Amino acid sequence: MNTVAGGPRARRRTKELAFISIAVGGLAIVVGGLLAATYLPALWAYHHYQPQEGDVIFQSLPFSELVKAIEGATNSPYSHCGIVAKEDGRWVVYEALTPVGPTPLREFIFRGRDNAFVVKRLKADHQPHVPKMLATVRSYRGRLYDQRYRLDDNAEAIYCSELIFLAYREATGGQPLGKLVTLGKLKWQPYIELIEQIEKGPAPLDRQIITPRDLARAEQLERVYAFGYGR
Image 1 (cartoon, one colour):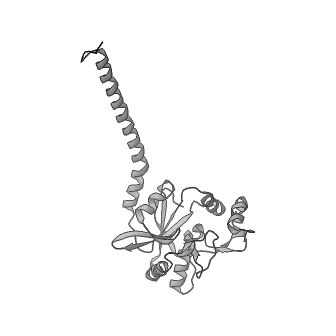
Image 2 (tube, rainbow, N blue to C red):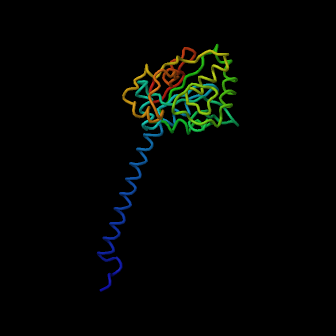
Image 3 (cartoon, helix red, strand yellow):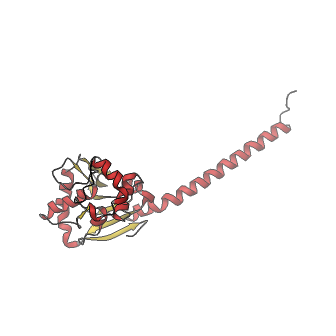
């Protein structure tokens, strides 16, 4: 027997569709609200930060075994850093993250864990070194990431804080930016398996390293902006 148009079954179908529409709309509002709560503060921070060439920007990368080792061994939230430059009218961050090269500032910030970032700037009397620093950084473009953290300006691979350390040393005729530490002075013990896997041998406890933490502590730098954490 055919259902008469406008009969009970048709009305029930109409109510079901209306309920589904309301549910989907409500879900979209909830999801949209969660996304807004997550990203709008970071978007505001991105637009509020006033970049300057030579700024050194620190962040926590998404968790991986290597990131956990970096942050755990240094007891610091900083697992990555880069240096700000302006190219073709847009702000970018030069970073050593396979390979060395520029990343749009917005992409760099939003890639970090919780979108958190801290910006350190060279104090006024060190600002004249910025042009040569950036020229040196660009000369390393294309080099791969060095998971062994060997401090060597002639190596084919380089790591994030080393890139900035070497650029400053070149620009100043040999002055350090931050304090070098040996692996043995860090909390390396919980990560010995990963270290030996990367090294394909014993952990080089006497290897000198410039960590993101120790770069951030350089006396030539001062904090000018922070979002998500303030250390």
